[in-house]
Image (tube, rainbow, N blue to C red; front, side, top):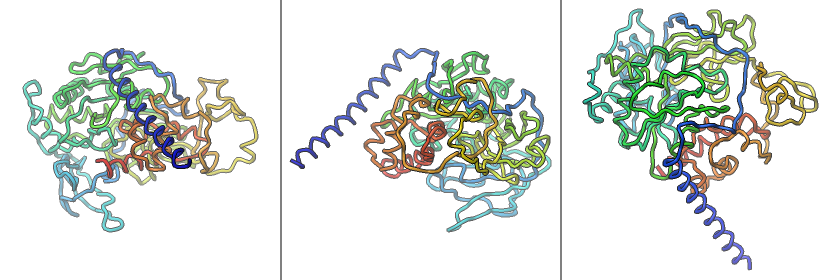
Length: 485
């Protein structure tokens, strides 16, 4: 009898996985044929914080030192091509990926390599460059984009160091140049807390954006999809070689993963590429000028900043050059984050802007203890629950939140709160659990091919169990890379 019961259970499990796969197949083909260019997201949560950047742009204090950290590029094993005291030009390779020597990583400035920091087993942690006062650049051959072949474009992006800006799903890693994507996605609709306004930062960059999307359109047999804000004019609106989608709704409607899921979901054996808008500008400038210009417009935001605003700097610059010039408040006990509060990395004042960030967020450090905080009405915190929490009464209020998790790590509690803020057509709790008990078949059937850790940032935020969702998803994706490839 026990054997019979076990067989029935196994058959039911297999049938459930087959049903999931078939449903995703039907959903994908339906969306390809009938999807409107207007996408309205209903599930999600906007976290409105104090300290948004004013729409003004100034140059940051010029940084003397720049740092490149291999840890910013998940999954790569760096192989150095420079040594200490060597002089480099802006755009000159400093290391490459050991598993694919064509993928090069370049210096954002010209100057001298003054330090190479190593960790355990001589693992490379960072390269520090002392910048020249006047930058000199590596000069690359310019292409005629109308007549250029895809092989020439790909070769230029690889040689120039622009290829790391192109990421792929599945696995949310740097794209494999030997695989052709079925489509390419760009999200210019920023909805993360205190995110940089692309409509402001990309203004006047239409020619660079056009060059970049034209080049990318030749690297796929599919479409370059761009998500833009529905109620605002975007620099992408009148560009050629793309299909724009007007998006509305709460965060994470601006995540590129949401765009992929609603337009062209990924099945086994398929690949899509993603590029962020600020990286398109660097790619476009390379194509137009032949130079790798690592300039960034960074939003300096957060309640602990005196004058939140936009600053022009470069990839890898010192954070101190931004936060101490009319920046961090005097005597503030704050946390500095390279990125947004949901997905960014903590950095110290002597740290550096990471390779992909266009936001520096400074918020109060939450290392204090709130006496009986669990047992009294709460008016100054964001929550999806109405139990003792009254943020739902003031939907437009902006909050001054700190880093306190208001609880400790404990076993999963099934509350249904994940589904309220998760707009992707999959089951977030089941995906997380499949990652935790390493069931590759179930991970595949539930849609792991198209997710990235950032897609689970909101479920982590609302999790009453304080589980590290993004870490769980990253470990699940790494397992899939190892076992499936």
